[in-house]
Image 1 (cartoon, helix red, strand yellow):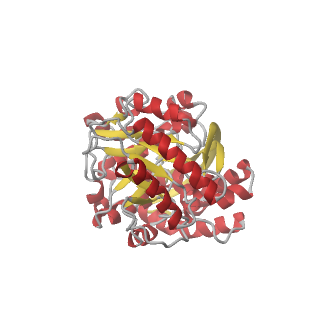
Image 2 (image 1 turned 90 degrees about the horizontal axis):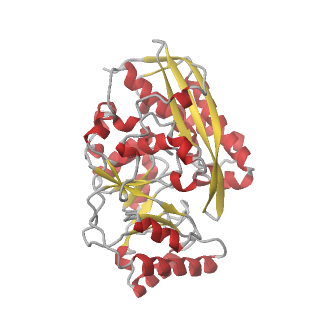
Image 3 (image 1 turned 135 degrees about the horizontal axis):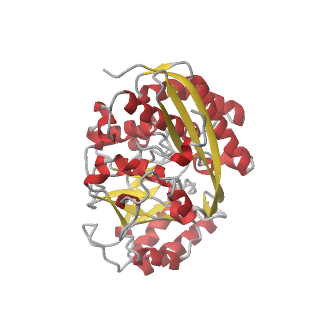
Length: 428
């Protein structure tokens, strides 16, 4: 029986981290706020949860309606609101806590953004540091010493694998240099996230995307890898909801067939907006849901529409919601993989704890995790120093993979250890 944990004190803070421009959804981000949430229990124990805000990813309308600072401030206000709700109350486990506070935080977000159609992912993104603090406090209060011990029994089947390697998937924004993609392959990366959905009209977008596909296949088509059944480099395209019609995507796929690239497309992520209910199960390629699968209910709707993979983000939609989505997908034989939000090094390992335990992706023999922070944060090396186990082998990519051996599982990737840097940002 889990303890009933009373929260007597909360605090929050943030710091701004500059980025090299990361272009997607027809826009670009140039900074990411790192948020910190503190929760202190009646026992005197306290824990710090960390989040990274992704305003453009989680709701393009909010991002475009405000300055970068204002958009981030709105999301941060929702984090603070959640902590105010929790203070003075009890919780038994993080999943039920999230279920209790999400509706109120979401309604609050709709009010302060003046957007009645606010994406639920915007609220979930705001709740990541709060949810993380709850998981850490839950573990500490109940004497749980590893991530495996903390996973509730209901969600263990979907997180029962133990990969000894996890693919480190870099991400290339719209308009990325083919030379940079080639360099990544030369360093051992065997799968890369390639952003399509170029700016401009649908016609202009498709022309640019086809040109990009051609260049990618010309560069990577003949490369070999030991991590796939066919020995070829798999292509992972992320459209970020830019395609308005199914026919546009079909033209893209027709070109892939024409140049011999079709069979190497492992997955195409979020081609359409979430209001587009087009059936995608007849395209001949695996279509994945990401930002449209806000909740487990949304994920199930997407599966009914023919989506045959889910990109899960413990670092963007909370660990609690991710566990629910992973289990629901697992029960329906729908594979999952971990996508990034351009998060800090500690959050990379929150995601890695999920990626290392997911069932293998079809035709591959390894866990899959996108991680692009090293490409876009201007101060990445400094941020690595905030990781409590920054010198551990699993923190660093080697030949395109993270080694997730026995020590990784014993130490839960370092996520249960405290970070002095983030501890100093709040009053405990």
